[in-house]
Length: 104
Image 1 (cartoon, rainbow, N blue to C red):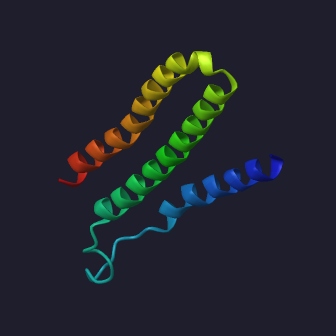
Image 2 (cartoon, rainbow, N blue to C red):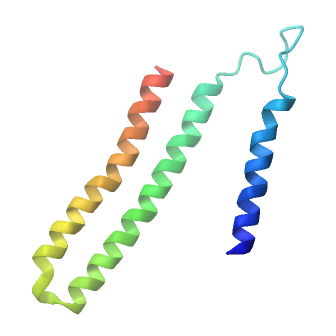
């Protein structure tokens, strides 16, 4: 756990220091014409989708285990699972809408 925290702290320092090296091209050459909003939007959607997929897998596995342990509570577990999956999926949908607004 300590190693993970050090890695995340180092990553935050590197990401925070990156804009210090950014400089506009004097001659207008280079990657000045790249649409960075669209590129980063793709990465944001990929991250949101992968995290939603992992969360949905964890929720479904926990619900299946709960139903197997207590078959009498299947209806309640199923209701909580559907509600939880809807909240998890809303993260990806909100990300998609924000990206659509920003890029469009």
